[in-house]
Image 1 (cartoon, helix red, strand yellow):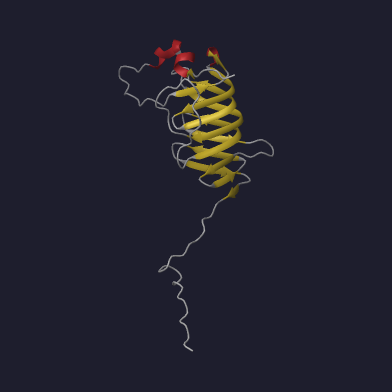
Image 2 (image 1 turned 30 degrees about the vertical axis):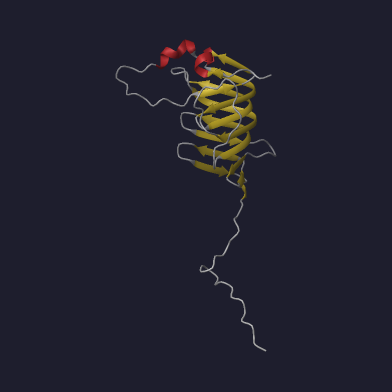
Length: 199
């Protein structure tokens, strides 16, 4: 069963839209990327400022797409924006092209060029700091793909604002090393065929 896309602002937070209005002297802020949500079920606990998103959950915010079995989102009580996203169960993360229009159906996965992808059991994304931490389970480390390289570690941290990846504990890297090609004039001299000896 595939549920229709549920807009964060339209579905959960229409009642609290006025709380995000800027004060008279506050400088204008750059609007943050909208959050697009698809799932089989979404339960918004307004008193706790929590959204429980279950059953084939997909969240897209800017160029980040998270697919997981379930997601627990903590909302800011003042602005009703996602503060913290905790995805659990078969978590997949990809850098994608940002959504320009509001699609009704869940878009097909289209990974951006030269993008990083990740897989883990638990991912915690603090939207206020831009830091994502990936965790595994016993015997199943999180993994990140950077180009053709595959990196495993017990804990992987990605700071989106600084574009820094950190790997901790039991790190394993499978790197693809390009073959060295030698060009005439650089490195080794070109091969000259032997001169035939006259008879």
